[in-house]
Image 1: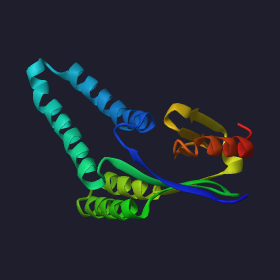
Image 2 (image 1 turned 90 degrees about the vertical axis):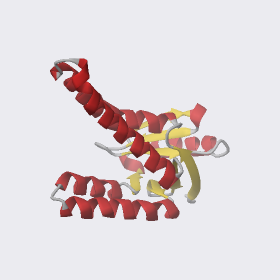
Image 3 (image 1 turned 90 degrees about the horizontal axis):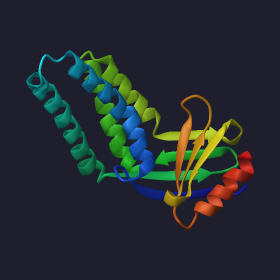
Image 4 (image 1 turned 180 degrees about the vertical axis):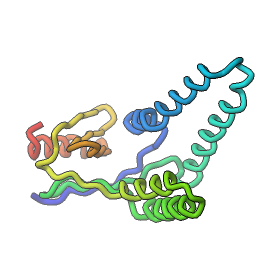
Length: 179
């Protein structure tokens, strides 16, 4: 099988697959936190500060993403005889390595292992591969030219295709997986 490779820039806050994953990863825990705060609050005035703090953190995170990465995820996808591989493009990977390294360093320095662990996990997800024989489920989103490939537990990749290559990539995934 010949190697198929392409690079694409995906808008982080406008692509439905990314937005859905952000809602699950960030929205769900913060939604539970806000619900717990509402249940424990004596009155609505006592919620102003914690909700403003959460809103401020969301805004600063959005601003950081818009400034550092221009609100885009720069990804490179590779399909070869081994499997499906997605990795962050080199220019963005360099920035990510610095940010993730700072998270690890500052987390360890301040005695916050959760922050250090988050930095290590984020760095580990910069280059992922799922072998063809490990793929168990495939979800297709033809309208947005995206194919979600699922392997084992917590093993999934989004193939963000171009309008020109979506059909070819979809046919190849069907051929190699039978799904």
